[in-house]
Amino acid sequence: MATTTTNPKISLKLLIDTNSNKVLFAEAGKDFVDLLFGLLALPLGTFLALLTEHDDTAATFGSLSRVYQSVQNLDNDYLQPNQTKDTLLTPKIGASNTAQTPLLKQFLEMADSPNQTNSSQSQSQYDYYQRNANANMVHGYVKGVVTYMVMDDLTVKPMSSISSIALLNILKVKDITSLQEKTVTVDMDEGLKLFMKAFSKSTTVLTDMFLPIKPNVNKDQGSCQLQECFNA
Image (cartoon, rainbow, N blue to C red):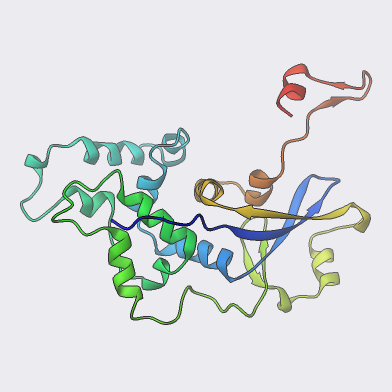
């Protein structure tokens, strides 16, 4: 199995409405858009392999996580002679561009580690993708000379396709003095959170990930609830 030697990070510039404490959109480069689009190329088994150790997984995937655990716990004697658990737990697809997206490449390496049942017979996902990627000189999915706009619900558009004034009108921004820019980074941990949020029903993914919930302030008393203040 390949070993990760770097911890890739992706930078995003958020435009925040401080009045509503909401991310209006993020300015993103090729690397973040490749990460989002690459999610469509990963098999469901790979997602479950990545998230199965997290407490939120069962809630996110419901009974499907139980199916995944059933395969993990099933004795190999019950499998067909030409089948292995890895076929289901870490399925492979021939999308070489996925292996060239830094965070996705790291996720593929991580997905291999808990599930490789027979290293002499099973080829790791990372090696499989990397072998196919070596023959492909085009990395990722989108061109890198463009800045992209990623909305709070993860809708992606080229920034050049809409003017700033038109965008503010679409977003119903009335007070431009409430707008604030904030640069954030997405690493392995944030990437896993993004995976889980992308599978949820949330339409405020970026807000949920990067903006803390403001404490509920009692205007009459000028104080917030004790527990909320403690956690803020």
